[in-house]
Image 1 (cartoon, rainbow, N blue to C red):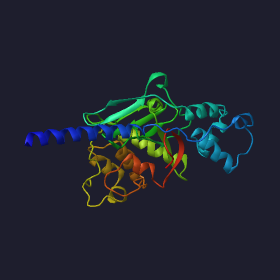
Image 2 (image 1 turned 90 degrees about the vertical axis):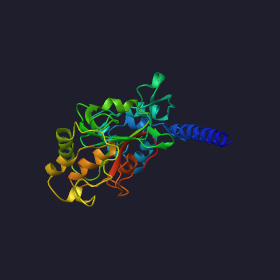
Image 3 (image 1 turned 90 degrees about the horizontal axis):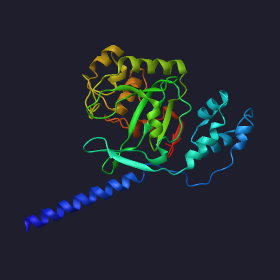
Image 4 (image 1 turned 45 degrees about the horizontal axis):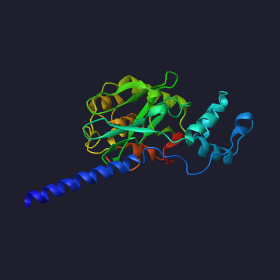
Length: 286
């Protein structure tokens, strides 16, 4: 009898994990639930000054915020708005594969292996997605742009690897992503943060529990209020994707962890009031 109960419990547990996982995969990419609008006038009349309502419309139609739209217009690339809009509204085919023994990651499949374009980035910009999940718990990934011209990022990818400089183009193969930028901070300062990350934070082992315990301090706040950056950098023996982004910004006085907990997640960064959206694709705005 005990064996029967054990078998039934095991079957129920397996079924629960299966359906929980399938439910998570349904949220990997979101397309708008409203119709496409004609935005050709914004391409043809590039010199026209846009109103707040214009920017809101373009954001809902392309995923580009005011900062992104202005960057396209200033470089004469406003025709890209039509391409971005088409891809923003197009459903995608996904493939989900294990990236560790206990987690999965989603990427575009079929003809959509190269999804939405990322036409506008600056050094220090933060990339976020929620295309990883542990059974039914969706977490995600994060990175920081270190070189906008060369389209390079610094990332902590997965267990068993070290932080590394990678191509930004990899992010165009995800079913969803967001590009975030530090609000009201000059580009020069954001470039300094990105440069520090590139020069000092590559080659650090992936550690899933990074941030759960203070690095030689009793309180989390002392990470960015006490000690020099060199002293702090020397204590960092492991990190994970969101912690890496949080960590480098914390060294410059910016705490991007929106809930103040010890474990920093991509969701915590996404909801930080210190950040603004530059572009979103396949996901709801924060």
